[in-house]
Image (cartoon, rainbow, N blue to C red; front, side, top):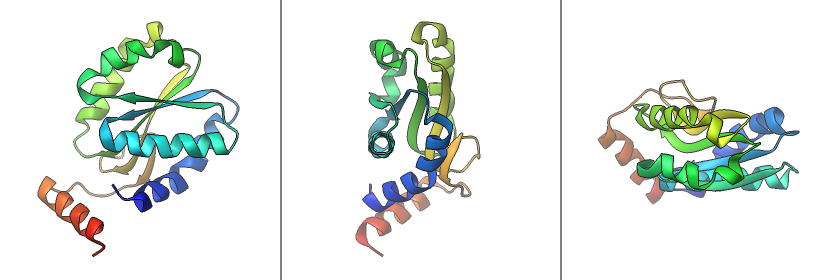
Length: 149
């Protein structure tokens, strides 16, 4: 993952989240490796701008367990899931379904979803919106970006 992607994401999404949560405690939950990268950058932005923000990691395969394990940190905070992209909405739906099902036990004040790329226009915050591409096209573009071409 290129740091320029994260910088672009934070530049576009950070101020929107700041406007919504500047007076409210928030917890960013990075999903998977890429989501953790973006989530950590967003948390850093929030803390540097004086927000009461913290961060947790969520694994795509153990969402329920990870949320349960972190329920003390989540209680009383707005919960913002962070991932790199929404292509098919599978992770988006899975994570939000589990969080909503566990809402009473977790005690969060609200739940949102932030991504760098939103091909379905369903995330609450996104860095950019684009048409869905095939996995091969996406990976080819990603690799070109890593190589600087």
